[in-house]
Image 1 (spheres, helix red, strand yellow):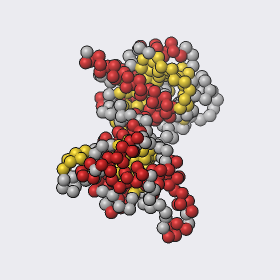
Image 2 (tube, rainbow, N blue to C red; image 1 turned 60 degrees about the horizontal axis):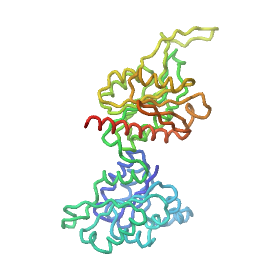
Image 3 (cartoon, rainbow, N blue to C red; image 1 turned 90 degrees about the vertical axis):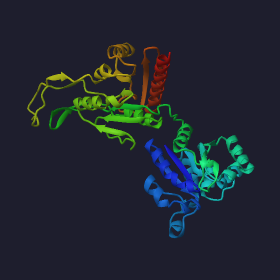
Image 4 (tube, one colour; image 1 turned 90 degrees about the horizontal axis):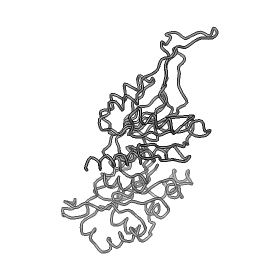
Length: 405
C-alpha cells in the first residue's frame, strides 16, 4: 500500500517525520508532498532520507529537469492514481480552505482534487484560527464530502496561547489512516508470533528434504497483523520473500531450528499463528560428504518435533492457531488436529485442488474453531490472512468476556 503525506507550513511540520516512520512500520510506502511554506520548517531532504521516495515540492520541475521530463506536468495525476490514501498532517487553515473551495493552487491541493482515495487531514493552527467560523465551515464541508478529520488536541500552543489547535497525537493520526485503508487497529497491544515457509532437512552438503511451501501465507498473516496494530515476531524458513522492515524476523532452516526459535519467543507472544510447513521427517543421520551417484540408496528417516503440539502444551493464555494442508477427509482430519493439539483454531486447505495452496497467490480454506466453521471461498492469501485475524479477534473478545463474567 502507498500513502501520500501532505506536509503544510506550521511548527508541527517536524512531527510529520515520525508519521513517516510509523506508517513504514506498518509496511506502507510513503511519498511526501510539501507545500512551499512547509519547506521553511523542514527540509525536503529529511523526508527523502526517511521515506526513500522522491519528495514533491512543486507543481512543475525546474530548469533542465523540466525540459527532460515531460511527465512532470501530469505528475499529480500519476500520484493520485497510485496512492491508497492521502494524509495531510499538519493541515493548516489555508490548505483546509483550498480543499473545501476546490482551489488547486499547488501540487498538494491539485492532488486532493485529482485523487479518489480516502483523505485524512490532521489540522494544526492557532486556537482562534481553529475556532473561526470560516475554518469550522470549511471543516463541515470536508466532513460532508467524506474527509476524515483528526481533531486537534488542546493545550499550550507554539504561539503562546492555550486551547485547541495542537496537532493530534501521532497514534490517533495513524489509527485514522489505517481505518481509511480498511485496516482497523484491533490487534493493538498484541504480540503475534507467526511461523512461515518450509524447512529443509539435510541429507548431505548438497541435498535436503523440503516441501513446496512458498511462505506467502505466513508473510501475508504477518503483514496483515502488523497493519492491524500488533507487534509481529516472524520465524521464517527459507523463502525468496522480503518482509516489511517493521517485522522482527528470525530466519531458520531446519525443523529443529524453527522449534528452538519458536519456543524461545513464545513467552513474549499473546497470539501464535503457525502457518509454516514444517518437515514431518528428517534423515536419521546426514552425510558429511556428498553422496555419490552409484545406484539405489535407502534413506532412513525419523520424525521431527511436533512444534505445534509443544506450543499448545506450553501455552499460558496465548491464542494458538494452526494451519493444515490436507488432500483427503479434509474437515475430519482438521477437527482431529484441533482437538489432539489443544488448539484454539485451525485453518485447513485442500492442496489437491489446482491453482490454490502451494506455489500460488490464492487459497481456499476453512477456519475451524470449537464453536464454528468459516468457509473462505477461493481468494487471495492476503484476504485469507484478514479472515484468519478476524477469527483471532473474535476468540480474544470471547475469552475476555468469559473472564469478566
